Length: 111
Length: 119
Length: 191
Image (cartoon, rainbow over all chains, first blue to last red; front, side, top):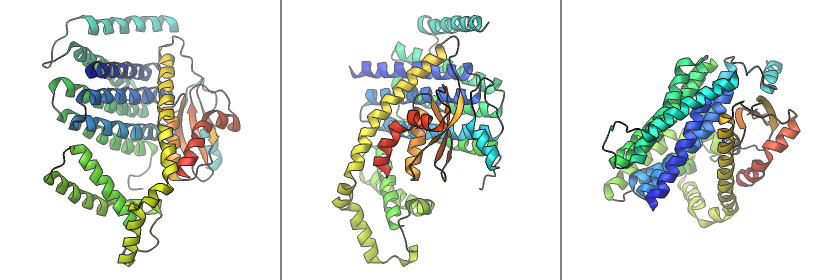
């Protein structure tokens, strides 16, 4: 029974991972790519790790999987934030159909 | 034009997915269950998308983003590998890879931003 | 400084125990050694953030040490902050629910043939002041539907948010739509 629930979690995680990486290919500029992929891949991999925890129970591998979930949820948004900021500062433009860019306006005002 | 491209892409992805699900796949390890083997190959397909973005990305920031996503996928790979082989140290590889990938992405971001490393 | 060191030691020791998941003498001794090493090497990094020690490290007396130990381990600390922990546990399911919604929405956007996006970077206000609170707010915004934090302006209390489906460019309206639901809870946890 535990095995089946673990497989359900792993399958959900695989679907989210797949859609996240598809977003990496489909979207037009770096901000949208990061935006779609970091969310889907974080939850997808967390789900796979939770499936591993359900499969292994409270053994060393299972507890490590739980710690990995905490680590992933804390660090994946930070890396996305760093990449988006550095892309903007290194001069990558937004998609041409974007609505507004308040960040660039403020940068111009302050500098 | 856009819808035609979407349709072609849909056909390609569905063909690949059905090949993964229904065809007999080469067995890399002693798999205990068929589901995990298919899962492993689906994850490899996602990794292929990341590699596509690393190769084709127009700006360096795109490549760095795809590298970050690929690092997280490796964690999923090692988590799945831990189940059929029954070895606990695969998840250790995943933890080490994720930590190191996070640090390297921070360094890459600083480099792209044009700041010095000792700031 | 002492408090920071004790916190770091406890955290490192717990992490060590969780990573090994076995209680025997060798592992415990290794955990104590590694914890002491980590706490002495890295306590200086948290000096500004913790803001606890008002004396220099050499001026710590034994009574000072004892009082900080008592303050740390005694129950009053826990009881005083009990409400915060309760709100934190209330925050986790809210966060998971928003995260699930974000993922379903993201998958829908990716699979849609005509790519229904209207992206832009908007500016929102926040009233949170502490570092931890701002970090949690930015991380929550990144993992929830339609938004990704690009930069934080701490002095003026602004966040620059990449929104994939811009509903309003106005700063007050955007704040109302994006930040309110988390800020209410995070304010109770961290301030």
